[in-house]
Length: 167
Image 1 (cartoon, helix red, strand yellow):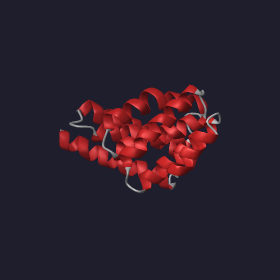
Image 2: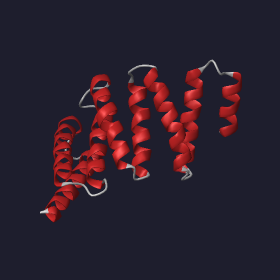
Image 3: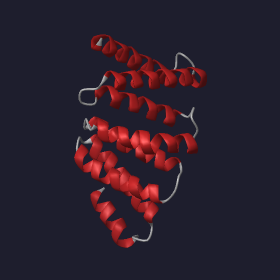
Image 4: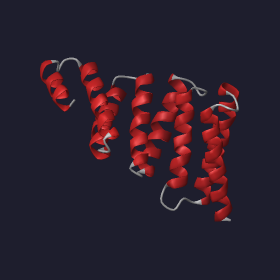
């Protein structure tokens, strides 16, 4: 894939969409191989370029993947900044507040709030509030037995346990 990307950059340098797709594919493979830092460099580049091309669902997906990589690398503060300041408003505008992508972004924000270094009680309270809102939407849109509804309910239970330990 690295050789493929080099060829695409050389012979199709004018075709930014093809280059971005190739970079995204390479980043995905690098992530799967556990080469997260290398994948992160590509994901940042793709996200920046997609942002310049306007607001659309692709930007939401690429941004979510970038934030997910940051979370895997335990860079919660950086991930939260991207999720809260850029992706959540964009997702609400582009795909809507009840879309699965928007709800996943909300769930990731709560994870960042809980897992960041030394979270405050206010951070954990905010994480619980976000998850409660997310679960309400998931139940309404996907139903109470949907797997992602259950996952967020489990996250909320863990958040409540953390709050109890903080008391």
